[in-house]
Length: 496
Image (cartoon, rainbow, N blue to C red):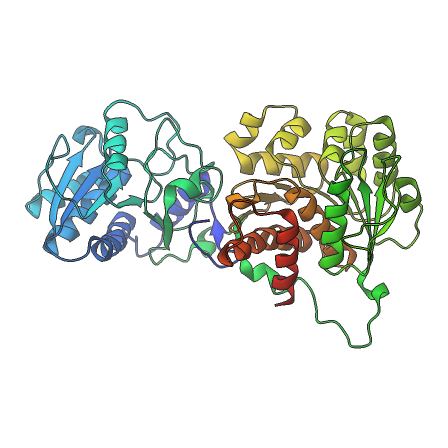
């Protein structure tokens, strides 16, 4: 992820941002939001451009983002920068605030250009074409300006969101600015943190422009950051034994997929479960995990009969056989916290009765789909899920009364109470086999030790990515990073 933010930093959807702006306008002091935002961005631009006299190109669009750009340009000109402003809009259609900003730019001696000047050695390009709320694909002149900025080789500072990036979802609408820096105002937007956002935003700088934002509107969305690790587990008493730390059952490992169940079991063991039982479906299943002999390997049937389990995980290597469906139905009927992944999710997608059972469960159910599995659960396409990952996660949480994480860049966690979070850890090295199985085992380990469902899910999701980041920092990956290496790094981080 491009930037680090404190755990629980608020994240707001566009509709919520509009409500905040309306509430701020009603405050007794009537804060001038455009003036504040423009000054904050100008101060950052001054730092990035590298000193007075340097040439700066400002791209101003047709809306309030263009108004911010005029304010930035005026400040930079007053600070003796050589500022050129290309305006791609209609002056007659500007809002009153943006029109006032344009008037002030002209009063400071500024002019507007129709095209980017040639043969100019820009020190910085400021992208003020489009902000939040863009819903249509970028085309025509605006697309040409975006392409020119991206091809220039000059660092780009995007205002609020990179132009062309949908602020609620992180989708690229036709084309988008690839910024090295993005300064965003009032609150973070989900599109900066998930899907394509991290590839387009560069370093994200949040400026609240001196508003008490949570007082204006408490957030349903939040950043999932390193602070989540603090409260995951309590210090262990010296007079402890393995029974204090729970017993995990892993159900999966059909023929040809035994490794998935073993990876989940190893992760559960190394994240602190007192005992871990792996219930295998394969007829010729191994009797011992030679790499992790502490795991207890049994048949899935026998593990489901154990009376001292404190958590179950179903799905790693499960398969779609009739026997797999029977084991899943049995697990759903047990009064245990339950993690469901992989083919466990695919079996649920095939059976409306199972969805009803999940919704009626009295104990916590946690689902960990990737986008294709989420699409099957919601009877839609993977594209539909990626079109709005936050909305999709919230819909699953609501319809199945469960906690859910939709995995991927900027994994989205959602809960039945309509709260959600976006993870900020992880890297492309995690796009390899077995990573999801490890996450399942990590979540199960925390649940088995008595960690609350939401905390267990969010802690594991963040820790999973942070462990991969630690591996890369140590020189392992991202190319060739393995799930086993992430498990070991997660154990080290949790103990640290």
